[in-house]
Each structure stands twice: as C-alpha cells, then as structure tokens.
Length: 495
Image (tube, rainbow, N blue to C red):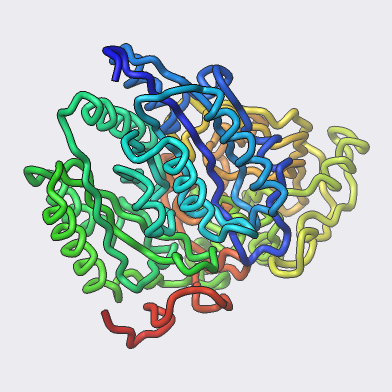
C-alpha cells in the first residue's frame, strides 16, 4: 500500500419485494440514482447516506478516494434479468477502469433480489471479491432490513449495518466502515467476522429500535460491541417481503483477529434473539379499531398504513384507510396517493376548480378500489423538495413529480403524486403549502421509517394492519423459498 491509500467506493441498493408482480427495471435505477465517478461525490458527499460518511472520513484521512459506481432504486419487485445484468456490466467495467485499489468500501442493501440471482447482494459482492483478490480489504455497510447470506459474509472482511430504525445513522455507519478500512490498511486492525442465523423472522411492526422489544435487545448488542477485541456488532432485522432462502433475522460480530471471539459473541446474540422470539410478533390493529382509537385521541395522529408501505415496495395508491376515513366523515385528515392520472385531471381543471375524481386504487386489486368523490383543487406543485435533517434513507433531495392537492367537502385532503414517494420527510407536505400540525389524522404509508419525520409533530402513532403486499402479518403471505422450519410460520420451530 502506498502512503496515501487509494480506496474505491461501490454501491448497489434496492429492497426487492418478491410479492409484487411487476419487476424493477433498469429505468427504475436510471430515474432515481445511477452514477459513476465524481458525480457520486457531487450527489452524495453531503447527504446523510453512508456514502456521505465514506467521503467524510476518507477526506479527513487524506486518502485518495475513487468513487466508482453507485445505483439505487426505490423498493419494488424483483430486479429483472436485463436490468441486473446491465447494472453489473457497468459496475465491473467501472471497477476495472478504476485501476489498482488498496481497499474498497461497499454499500449493498442486503435485500436485493433479482430474477437470475435471488441473493443479488451475495452475488455481486462475491464477484467483486473474485475480481480484486483475497488480499484487498472489502468493508461494507448494510441496511438492517438485509436478509443476510453466507455469501455476503464470505465475500467481505467486515459488514456493518445501521443501528437505528428509522435509519437516521447511515452517515455515521459510513464513517465507521471507512475508519475500520483505514485501520485495516494501516495494520492496526484485523477484522474477522462471524454471523449467527437463528431460524426466525421479526415482524416488521416490531422493528423500531426506539421501542421494545428491539430497545432492550440492542442494549445487549451494545454490551457486546464494547467488549475488548470486538470491532463491530450488527443486527439484521430482516426483510420479510423477499421470498428467498436467506429471508430472516441475523447477527454479525466483527472481532480483531480473533475468530473464536467473533463466533462466540455472534452465537450468544443469536441465542438471545431466539430466546425472545415470541416478543417479536406484532399486535396487528385493524382499520376500524385504529380509527375508533383515533376518534378518542387528540391530534395530530399519524396512522401508519402498513399494508401499503412504499418503503417496502408497495404501490403507494392504497385506498383502504382513505375509504374508511371518508365513510366516517372524519374531518381534517390527510392521505397521499400515487395517481398520475388524477394529477393530470386536476391540472386540467385548475386551482379552485371542483371536479369528480376516482383517486388511487389503480395499481392492483390488493390495496382497495379507487375512492370516488367530488374534490376541490387546492394547489398544483412541481413536487420537488429538500430535507436538511437526517431521515430514513439518508437522502436530501426528492422528486415526487407533478403534484395536486385536493379536498372533499368533508375535509379529507388528498395529496396526489405523479411518482411514488416514500413518506420520509415532512417537507413533502410543507413544500405543497400543507401544515402537518393542522390535521387531526395524517396517513403515512410505512411502518417505522416515517417516524423520524412524523413523531416530532404527532401526539400519537397508530400502526394499522391494512392488507397488501407489505402486510405486517407475514404469515398471510405465501412463501415458496423460505427456510423451514422458521418462527413464526412454524410456531413450534426449534433451534
């Protein structure tokens, strides 16, 4: 290694929901994030993403940073064959063009599924390892919704996941990964990794790290992290909407040259997770019960629409909560729906116009029929906004396409967007002249991810077990490839 280490950066991230029939295409990446070379620095160095943390720490160390390739798409269906092959061709061509490297920082998601490679992250990480050889340190970050695989572990010297859900520590984890790589290159650390794979999946409703049961479990993880000889310790909560053999929860421990210590602590944490498996089953409050509770509470109240969780790949046009709110004539409620057709109709009518619309419910038959009503057009907007605070996903610039805000006579306000948008930022509302504090009910299509934005303004948070491709109750989904036995599907599973 030269005195000034030459370190490359590679990223390929998508959370793939295999219960969605539509595939993720190359265009999904191209329209969201597809960068090579210095464009990666320009787009992400100042972001809250882990890549921003990579740049910050490497720049502080005066390393030679070689941004190579970065691609990201919103969660959706499996990545189609043509798309993954094109992405990998571009990645590996850029890697070859980059020349000799002393080390690589990698940012996979951990729950990417493609048609030819169900363990897409394990595949591309293994291919990177094959191309750079066994002596080049590879250290990567993971989303804790990763479905960890043995291939991912074998390909890398260390894997470090975000410690928070909502994910507000991504930049910090990028800094941690970069610092560990620098120490490794300097001969100050010898990362040795072990993973534990208890045969269980954690209910998405129970994956908030600020709430029990995760809160106390993460305290145990922190105890292990502070042990002498332990370099890093990570929890993979898992992504239940990927029907792959790797689906499930896992733990990773990275020790300093001590394989026995890494294995011992990984097994201890895996056993502790397994022992508490019954606590990781969700409560699953249905729509009517949630609205009964909301009617008796002071607002603002955030209703988390778990079955139409855009951050889990759902279409974002689910209407079941909107129908129930409209039928009850609950005032001062806000729902966001992906519906380019209705946006176009509202634009044609113009601000102040009154027109009949059938909003939402157009993507599939799983998330409710369109909601038909007469709406007043309150405003029309470009749909671009920025977020300065650390929010789930780590991004700072957003584009939900042309946007219309409409309202029924009974006070149901609907934000209609031309592009699917994850509800990770209140700027989504504020940029369209909507005051979040003025509503009694705010429907956010997510489970835990919206909390970083919505919790500061909402007096109450209610997770609603709506049907859909991201149903909180994973036992409703029909798997063909998951491990068996696995808790909670096989409730008497042993380990």
